[in-house]
Image 1 (tube, rainbow, N blue to C red):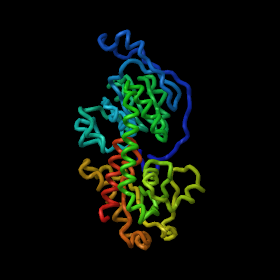
Image 2 (image 1 turned 135 degrees about the vertical axis):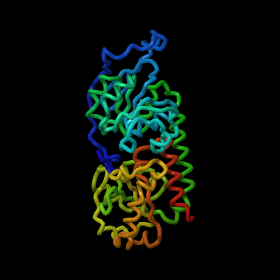
Image 3 (image 1 turned 30 degrees about the horizontal axis):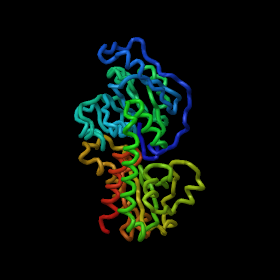
Image 4 (image 1 turned 60 degrees about the horizontal axis):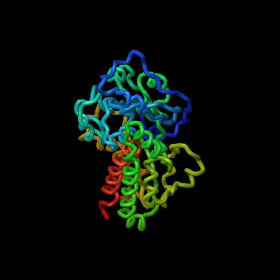
Length: 349
């Protein structure tokens, strides 16, 4: 299934159901040494988007559906045994994660199973790794929840509530003491970012935020998603804010290319791009940014309307990877996103 930045940042209706964790009776017996009576009594009831799930003991075999939850798990210094990305960049198991999983692979210390994609996981592959915990997000994996919860305790979390997501995952893996530290780390990153970008905000405050996965189709980025919210937090003002307010909470607002000159009051344009249509041309993470953005950069350069706006004439159009900012809103992604913005926006300052 092809996934665009619009899907990655969409707010889909939350499905609420009250479900307790279910364990298959034919699951392999765990070694006695790791299943003491104290573990059986060490149970936590965790609230998430599908209801409540009980997790007992210390999960050792965790399957993760999507980079959003993988980032938080790795931030808590816990390793998964299986992973499903949003996009099928890699076929086969992740035998060399650092070369096969964008951004997060370097923090995975051993080979792990590839269990499909977050919206369409391979159930047989998940069963094979014998998980004792499954983590995902509700607007991608909700239709799989009943099946997944029969394999292992399953938490499906809200992408738009990162603090609760981190707290729930930490509780599930017995790392609650690290939550405050990680939240503080994110805030410190943002504070430093505001200081770093303050001179640019003072001289170029008005920013037009666009997205595109199939140029010349473009859309206005909604202020509710992680790609655009950080830009606003840094102090920039969105020239399209009134249009977004009038449109409601949609993740993206389609924009006719012919209307771009109406936004000539923008000092800067940031275009969030993604390319999930040419996966056969994807040759590894060494060309990930080029794979995601090169076609968009070229198309923008060759389009007469795009080149006619003031920001293009001033050389103030920048391109950012939608996969990064939409998928990784936590401490790892925030740092990478800020560095990417700094490299582009401040390179001439």
